[in-house]
Length: 507
Picture 1: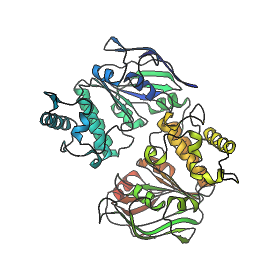
Picture 2: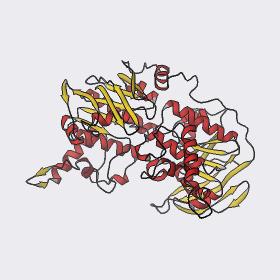
Picture 3: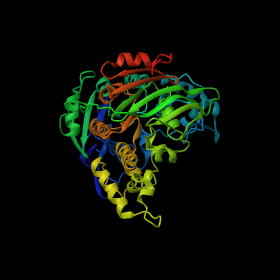
Picture 4: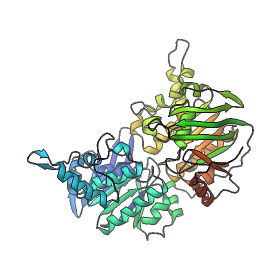
């Protein structure tokens, strides 16, 4: 890619970017949120067609001018976006060949499609029936189906945008192993990732983009990557510590649940929360650790106004007083806030602009005596949070769906800071966010704790919990299996507790 420049209204997303990828390499692209990584890949894959950008693309030595995604796929370039593009109600087979159907005599040949699907699933290591519906698969399995779909199109260059951001450690490792297998079959990969350990593990070359410019690009030896060099190039400065230092000063218990029990809404008799008991003090960051499916998110959503599952029993206390919160509105009124794991579905209305989203959890406080929203005050508050959280957007009038994933995450955070909750539950608050922005968000979390708020943070990254939390609860199969003070917690003992099914006996 030569001299690529892309301009959106009010912002230059890419400015004279250069990218060279060698055939057969796994090439990593790194950069902060909003740096232009996804925009560059959307140009390469035809999402942004020829004519909407300046510069040229050469593929296997020949100039290419893609008018749409179909044209890029015809050349062998396939992109898998961070937000998976599968239809839940359709089967694996139907998703793989959607728009690329196996046809014989003018009709879909389901027998041939099934056989080809089985072959593709075997290539990506999935032992599933081709007729299995996507909605019955885990996120890691769906990611592999996306890759199988790419292989069905005779892919030569596979682009993966944050492929492991929603995966647990085991699924992420399986995906990286698959990339190595594809490399052995002469398939080239470009991987956008914020996870420096994964980049170090599999990359043959790295390109770093900052503020729409190519900062540097160089070959590396897998397993011998200088992570500090990447961080300096990404953020324009060195980060001596990945997590900001902080000193906890916990006060009284402000949030507590006792024997909290919730049934799976889809599987009668299965408990997603099995007599969970835990507490959080004012000024404390409490971590929740568990493998995918352990019940962390289910617990958070059920506590936050019982908006998940069937509540069977248990007690919720705020500042020692039992309360019954049966709706999200009641939870907000009682000083709870919840930043959800799935920002696209549960955290945002993608049709709204930034200013409307930022104030959406506290609308009544922005209304005048006539019950109408005060537009000047709403804009002022939205602008303040845009500056404080460094949300990269041309204006607070911009639609949320025009922002990068990391900046969308910052908008969701701002939305729940505006109501000034006493208890803030953060479900994967830094998923898909670059190393510099992670540092800033952890600083914000510690500032909230310093103001006397209780913060409950769910994360699939154990180093993040060890770097940011003051105490860590472990959950397995809906049960609390342990609690570790940060002084004695290690990845090893947390993982041991995360994989045991025995409930902890603790106060």
